[in-house]
Length: 95
Image (cartoon, rainbow, N blue to C red; front, side, top):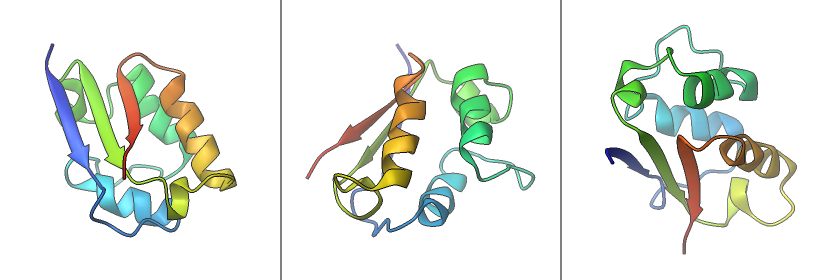
């Protein structure tokens, strides 16, 4: 199985904007990408938005459980939920 691994652990992710900035280049997001959770679902679930992601069976995003992904951060919980809705992408929270 071909995986695209995007390691965001070294980056300080405090907000969804930080997340979109961090994944834009490695995921090949187009300039017109919506930078919202519905657009992310279209990208990882439905596909057809990013040729880079579409060229792989699975997208793996690694991040730390701090900032955006700290326990209780509402935006991080919603973003993690989008990952959980598809088998073609996963979020791995590691120290």
